[in-house]
Length: 82
Image (cartoon, rainbow, N blue to C red; front, top):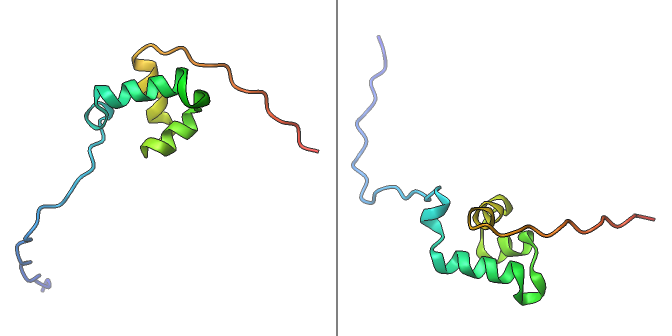
């Protein structure tokens, strides 16, 4: 005989979900800020710095910049370790 489960009480609050679509999380103003900071201001912030500042992944920052046609800067040469 299978064990029957007791019905759970109804939840009082609906579960919260994070929006995964980048377009829904970033508005035009925030994308404009990313572009401005990447291209000019704030000493030409890196994508990693922008990601940390805006609480995004680096990939999300790269996608946002790419979608609006920003030309990526060349990568800085790696430092040789001693």
